[in-house]
Amino acid sequence: MSVARILAEDTNSKQKRAKVDIRSALSFSDEDKAGMIQPYDDALVVTLRIGGYDVKRVMVDQGSGAKIMYPDLYKGLNLKPKDLTAYNSPLVSFDGKVVIPKGQIRLPVQAGSKVVEADFIVVDAFSPYMAIVARSWLHALGAISSTLHPKVKYPLGDRIEELVRNQSMARQCLVSTILHQPTAEPSTSAQEGL
Image (cartoon, rainbow, N blue to C red; front, side):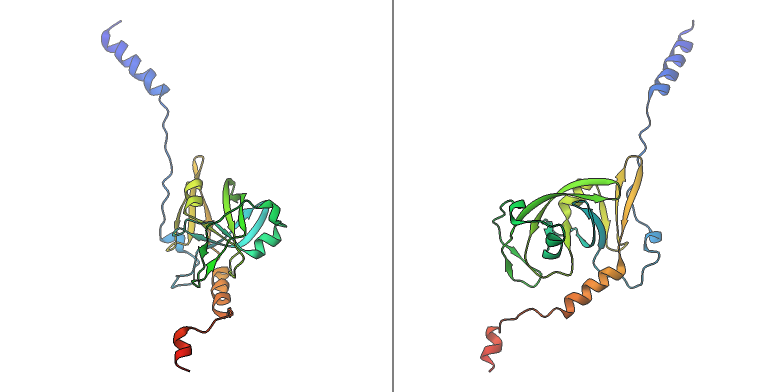
């Protein structure tokens, strides 16, 4: 047997044994913007399965580190104070008020067919959203989100799955926030003018 033939057989057997690991790229294109009312600058609002229930009005906030659960979801999941663990760090709400959390709870969050555990901080404050999922949830999911192409994409095996925004729900949340009339305390500057 010639040396060339032995080398050729060795190369062929290595090629047969080599596994090709081709992964789909997580990317966005103009096709991802199809069906949106433009201009689009609404929050990224999706439906997720949290604690075994389909939950609408979940905001994906890639700028936040905290996953938040609001009163409507807390009550809707029939959670009780005994279900919570202590969380002693105050938070600042969207309107600038300090909020003392009721506690924290770990729940499964399902996106498509992928489930990731998330620690939600439970607060008793107004929000048009049921919950907010944050950067750490995106990282655990292996996902990227785009507010320009309002979607979340993540790998699942050899394919890419996506969560599509609910633009009408995002706009309803915006309107709800605008119409919400918090009990306001008069500011110092307003009192000085009287």
